[in-house]
Image 1 (tube, each protein chain N blue to C red):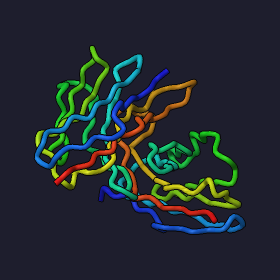
Image 2 (cartoon, rainbow over the protein chains, first blue to last red):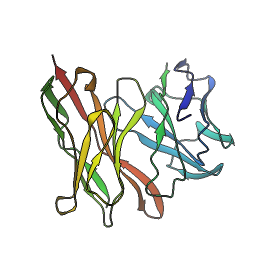
Image 3 (tube, chains in turn orange, purple):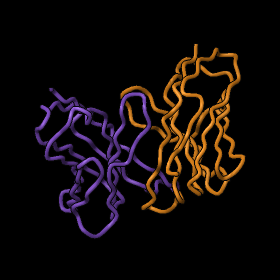
Image 4 (cartoon, rainbow over the protein chains, first blue to last red):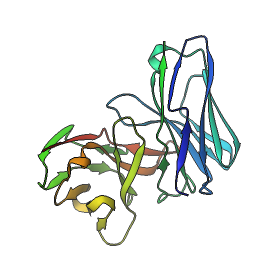
Amino acid sequence: DTEVTQTPKHLVMGMTNKKSLKCEQHMGHRAMYWYKQKAKKPPELMFVYSYEKLSINESVPSRFSPECPNSSLLNLHLHALQPEDSALYLCASSQDWREGGNEQFFGPGTRLTVL
Amino acid sequence: AQSVTQPDIHITVSEGASLELRCNYSYGATPYLFWYVQSPGQGLQLLLKYFSGDTLVQGIKGFEAEFKRSQSSFNLRKPSVHWSDAAEYFCAVGPTITSGTYKYIFGTGTRLKVLA
């Protein structure tokens, strides 16, 4: 299984809501990533988990809270978002993020709209 | 500083024509290079990658890329484009080290349009 799955596909939320994005992979990868992608832009790295520990936080606002319950799952908890947070949120995984040759496998993304 | 440049924001080709998408990188050591494709509203799919060895790399969907160290380039090519190739293409380098932080650096992307 070489697939990364993400749920939900689409999410509309108000600025006072709390919601979560979910990501799952069963490839035995030990690194998992959250990216944010605005329209017509490349993905921007938000967080990297390596062996279930947060390794990189790219100065992301605290209204985004990542969680890695186990090696196959990655969540992104959302609270008090702003309209400018509307974007495609991509999850990815790789064998080990410190290895240069490790390709990243991407999920289909969650299209988030904040009203 | 490490960087990836895709000089062409948009490219339009006719179906059946050949294609070349340009990618230039700036990196002090031998880079790990990737080409990804993204259809609208979808995730990124790896087309091919270069780590070392043969500088001409074959990928999926009939794509190939050539690593040229002297030109710091990793251009993507396809001899005959299909309408289904219309998508956004990203070149990437990674991981690179910036201030002790490992990062994958993506280019700004090239949007390919295919004319019937």
